[in-house]
Image 1 (cartoon, rainbow, N blue to C red):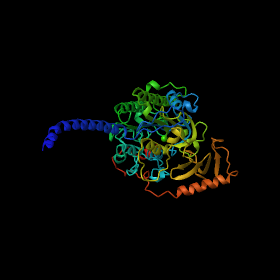
Image 2: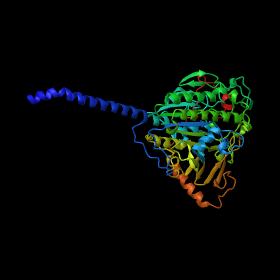
Image 3: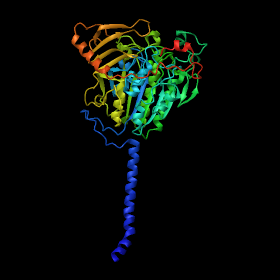
Image 4: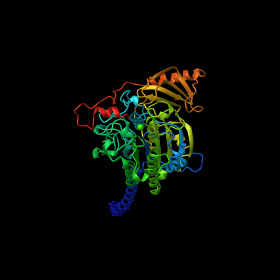
Length: 513
Ligand SMILES: [Ca+2]
């Protein structure tokens, strides 16, 4: 009894001590849980670059993907453009990695974007079509909801996700970014040359001498239309404003920002303060305004102390739209441009920036926008979806740990496999120029180019290297065995009389992408 009463007498004090210890433990646990909730629960990993200057990887790096529209490989200062000034992208390249063999997954907008966000070739999810090559304002389809986007992958790890800019994966509510893992959306849901006003000039005139009112494109906030026609002269600046605001608001937790500019896709629009500044003319003004926006975003990350825990990627969805002459960009040394499976159609700038983690330098190995899903998922410790992926994890190259796992690139024009690059060799089974109305040409044996010796694809080596062609044919057979027929999303059209955005035949005929 006594001991019992002693125990009782001591009990409350012991309980108080234990209680306060437990309270402290709970409090510490809560802080840890809160920190884990904010920043992920993984132990920091070593970034073994061998350079001796890489810091440990913070858990859950922020991810920012900056995506231009129709910007060519040769349109940035750091890729050799003689007159377009891009000091911020050049600095990003110097502090990070500049890839010279980086590819978009398709030569036109919609399939390229579908591939970036899913890590899958567009033939796998119905996001490519041979006639209606992209989605239009009268399209009834979109990226199927069951496809898992990078935003959905990163959300599992507690990321907040924002999509700003051009979506082009379905403008009907069920296909908008807010239904594909993004918490917020602000942007024009398709190309800036669409929704042509009935009284706008016809043909190229409206594109080469554009006015805001010629293109009745909507500007959406989340799922609500807030402006129409969108004022395109300020759209680049407003997208940047929105990005900077999102970064500031989410500075204390991991975030994923996907900023896809509508420009420099024609019609070219630029803010008054950038008009007439570039030696390259209007196209240069537009690119230089995008570059200034990149500078503001990187400066914001530096100011907030987030630069060492944010991966920033910059690329473009397809090559330059050459049929628009000086309103189109440059593919540098590469052949042709947007719409084609020549190198100029899909080889893009590829910049990766993450101070203290990415080993700075120029990378000549292959990479693709298809690879962003597996790469970002690996860096965030996120689980990949249970489906066939066409992307590979590029983080070994980014962190200076090893070579690129990408050895092969498939070049689809819409639903047909036109060409395959394996190592330095690229075989073209079919070719066709972009928008000049020439028919598809079949090549048997395929044309064969050595892209490292001959980046302009001029000297056919098919006769000298039948063994390379045989190897590429085996790769094609293996690849094609993995394809499964799926419903096409781009051929679906909103039925006549539907109240959706401008569905006149004229829009369909004049808006190419
Ligand atoms: Ca494009």
